Image (cartoon, rainbow, N blue to C red; front, side, top):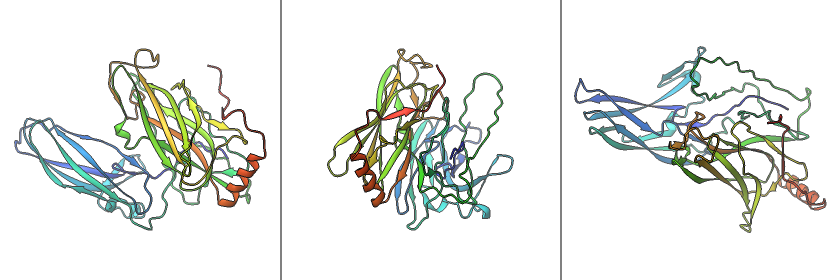
Length: 359
């Protein structure tokens, strides 16, 4: 099964829109309000809670009174976001009541910064939302799936895709094509492949100061036993290296699964494990992501080593994440695969990149 689109439903401070109404004490004063982070993406399970802070900066020469309002939004047929308190067609997808802000109204003196805190509570019993279906980046050919595996695309599923662009100084045009390749009608593959992104959380804490090489870490705990079928690093122009290691929940033994020490932004390669080398990991395994960014002149792809870089969707910003194709297994399948692996000679390699054109 080969799919070239993405489907996901993240809980966001952006998918639940957070808007601010302003009241300036001087009617002629110029309003200058900044907010960080502008966007936050989280994966949360039912019953989970997450708290964070919004930094609001007032650059105006007058104090501002700021009032928060939580709104839902959807994208209409003209690709325009529509905001509102209640959208009947979005009622089944709304997360607005999960989010609270404290305080809802705050005063910011002139040339100052203030903090508003937020909490996201996912109700118990909330069904699983959307899933990440696929990620495409520069130089990637696509995903390769093993025998008797595939993605699950349910009837009535909404598809949402997120395109990242940045200015190049001239008008550009884009045509996006989505393709789906299905198994023959009636055939149901035994194993479902899930795309799991591991990243530093929160994203906006990624910081790459000028003329430095920095390390950033991220973690993900596997809720069930599983097999990792593919490994794809994702960083931007300052990315240098990325390693994923597994920490055994029983022994704390650490095993390096894959490591790229010469990451190239122009080639986002999807490394597919050989059948006899795909990592088999027990439930509770902690996957540890280690990313290295090089913001020095030694990095030939660095647009400007004298500029600070942080998380962002432009190529001149940066990111840190790895996409893993995971097949979760029940106990019987996991134990059977482990015993079959023990009976075979040890593999001599970990992952092989999908064939790419010569550079």
